[in-house]
Image 1 (cartoon, protein in one colour):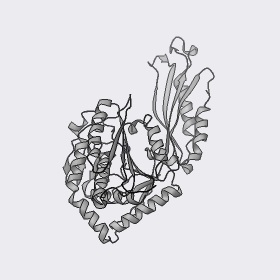
Image 2: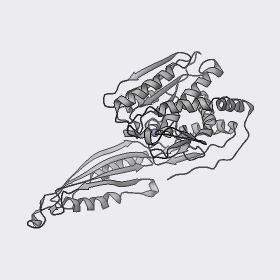
Image 3: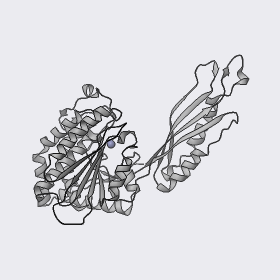
Image 4: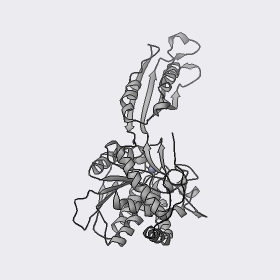
Length: 397
Ligand SMILES: [Zn+2]
């Protein structure tokens, strides 16, 4: 379920050229900001580590000019979240634009040793360089540029950076939603799509379920008939839930992990499956949730328990999203490039804000490949026009 429009060169305007040149001159500075952030490792499950990167990020934002209010939202089981409000000097009732991102990564401490942050030709590598420490650096440099160009920010801006996006955003979701409700639009600095840097105008909603079967253990040789095989029951349930997939609706059900049994000579008493559910349309959420919860044992001697639910609503390409994308396309055209869009299966915190009906544009961050993989990298040459696009969107969104 991916689609991308092709890029074709157009002509840049003089003002846009000046902006591109401004960021091109500062390209190495942007790279060194990214490097600093990548070299502070920050796996979601290590609060101390994530708090360290949060502190470094807070320091960088507080050093931007103007009146900056840096607020730490403490989290007990995850790293702290950071909210940064920039005061708008002018008199205007304009709502803020919300810049959204996360500084946690999927990489355990020590990954940096095997996967250092290195610039080789046009590639900058490292854990989280694409997802999404380059996005945070782009925010910083776009805001600094706007302050310089306008003698202060041209409109109110709020930045929210969270610590638990890679593990479901349970602790940050209420903050994200409350700030989004006050915002005119949400710009999400997650990685862009493909090497042409397409933005993301639709994301699937994501759910997770655990299907747990309890049977009865017995000796496979001595007491075979007294046993109730939980694995056999689970196998039938796996076929059942897999049949819920409906590709025409963009609805998929993937049994990703199964477990069960203890020894080959024991009829297994327990088995479980972890199931990933994706939906393209909000209206399909209740239906698939009901189907999952209505599972009943084929073998009545088995007990079956279902836990979980839909975690992120889909980000649908609403008229608000489409309008924001059109604004981005217009800015990109001035900068001399045709900005594509993509619909992707993965979720982000943009799903929450779009789910509230707030115009949201995602995938505005770094351009590269290999998120969550050993070859994760960004393209250094794309940084200037990315920063120029973000700066332009902050002005008009
Ligand atoms: Zn991400």
